[in-house]
Length: 380
Image (cartoon, rainbow, N blue to C red):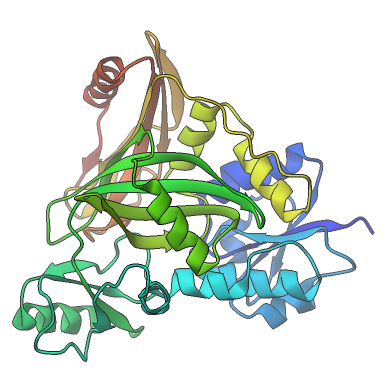
């Protein structure tokens, strides 16, 4: 039996369905997709095997023969995937680094010497806490249940509201002011390369919905973030780090030890002109790294189309790619016509994403505006 790539997944995502699975096929890999949601991956290329992917022992049990690699792009599954890869002696992430990245309490504790940030269990915040604070799930994603609070009473209201919907631990962290950026990196365990950076625009407080990301040169303070990632042990495979810069100081908001999502991964691959998904898989297969990053010319943006009300999506464009003059546009929906839409004030409210690459900011912004005015998204 040929050695297989085991791709460990939870819910179906465009990054896996339209990114990593096609990349694996182009590499000629035999892919086995391990998931606890097989119905969601029914149309995926390769063999789909049901598995409790939250437990590394179950992943190990499902692997047949000598695997070529074990890989996951899920926030929640980096630790079990790393442990399973280590069991078979395969290249992979340090499971401890993956745990630090996912658990915001562990991350703050581990970075305290480099960048002390107030962080506490949201139900045990001391009276002298440095408000405003941000309350959020300790291991949450997608801005879900993340709120800015200005005093103890507001904190109590928000945490009780969140706790009524979910039972996982909550943290309250010091609010970090500044311009929001991302840092996209790829490493092989020895060398970490910066692929690029986005400037992120978020919704007004108390919510933190990412509305658009613009490709931009990494800010001068980037070495501070690289030092913090090194302290966390992050240096293998792809990583998407969110941070703010304020008065010359760069401070991590969140480390997502995986490739950036919400279609910004496809934008980055197109802009860099490299087989990004193949390169990431190659690192996990133990292949010689191809970490060279080409110079980027032009401007690029990913802008989310965000629901403004709850209901049912009655009209929306389908996936498409087109040219508007010198600007390349692509639209990929995240909701289909007929889908129910719940207004959550998180990234879950995305109806789709417009991606654009062009020679300059003015051309790109004008093309995105024309695309949005030419199409209709109706929720009723």
